[in-house]
Amino acid sequence: MTPTLTYVAWMAVITWLLLLVASLIRARILSAGGLQVATGNREGLPEPTGLAGRAERTARNTLENFVLFAAIALTAHAAGLSSPRIESGATLFFWARIVYVPVYYLGVEYLRTGVWLVSVIGLGVMLSAML
Image 1 (tube, helix red, strand yellow):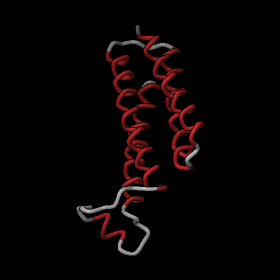
Image 2 (cartoon, one colour):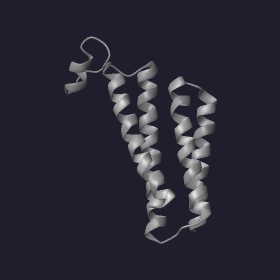
Image 3 (cartoon, helix red, strand yellow):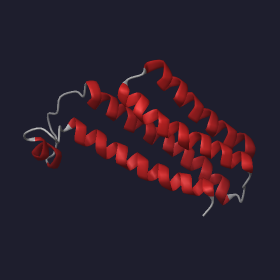
Image 4 (cartoon, one colour):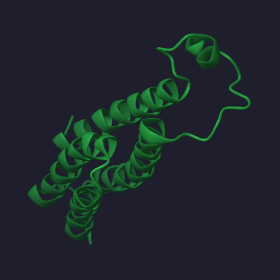
């Protein structure tokens, strides 16, 4: 498996974990009755605020960006394109997304946007190597 496809696989795992964690935080799994909420149909949950809101937005943003990353990486692979620039872009995207998670969870506003931009630049590097 190529390094780029390895990043795709790891991003799939990370995205799934972030969605799971956001869901468990919102259900307040560690509080009394949290397990019942987490295993129920989750009707009537209040709007997520604080950490629960940030966790949910982090997961959603990661999912949205993962779709773009996977589409670019898998298109490159299917076209038989492999280059150091594609790999570098994938590496930049992956590690920026890893940094993005704790930065967003902690609520560091401007840094969060900067780290997100670095991941988008990684996508751009991959695309520019393909076109």
